[in-house]
Image 1 (cartoon, rainbow, N blue to C red):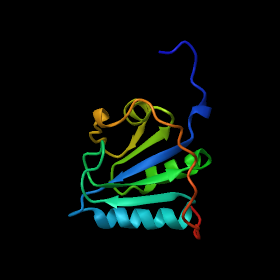
Image 2: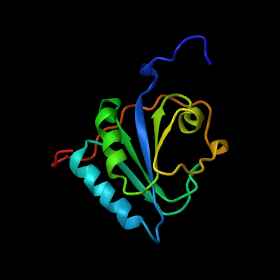
Image 3: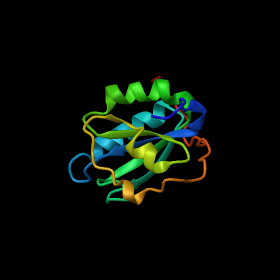
Image 4: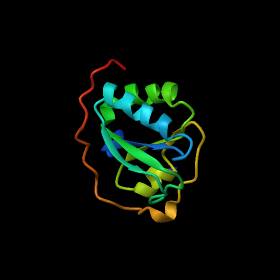
Length: 136
């Protein structure tokens, strides 16, 4: 443990990785994505129907500002529909963010830390690409 607590100001933004099986649960992932787009000001990433980076299963990423955490993460807890979701902070250490400091919604999956750097530039808060129209 460190000598002093880390400040939450280390967190520039958050990512939620929504995992799915292209053959059996992509429609569930599509529905969850549409619901998020209707309700939250988030940045929806590309679909990856194959393994990418440290992720062992198909997924898409959702980037969001720290101010949305208290509303979006509990909503995902209630609406993930059995999909596994990795939620992690974005600091200057992607390996620690994904492996040491994340939280899981649903079943935890393998994340390959050897494919993640220990140091990176601070990621700016995401610019939202949706215009929510429904209440959370």
